[in-house]
Length: 99
Image (tube, rainbow, N blue to C red):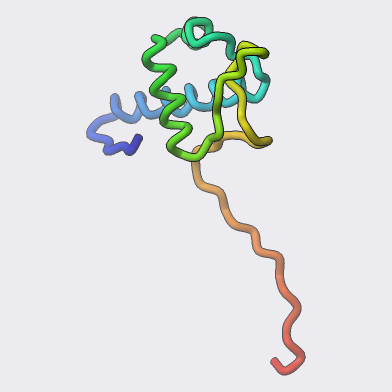
């Protein structure tokens, strides 16, 4: 999802999408999404919206799959989904003696 904001209403929709991704990530990490229908009910959206969000997250690199034993969507690797800017923090390297 790439956004071009034409109005404040568009920006509010973007905020809802970000919050939806955060909540979905939390439920996936807790392995408590339930079935797609249950997840849609928990998040107060349609199943179609859930499938769209999951597909977007996968396109952005999230290793999501449904675990039938746990009856939940899960990540295939340890981690969490993040949206936003992250500042790189560099560890200073020792200077060369010839400097």
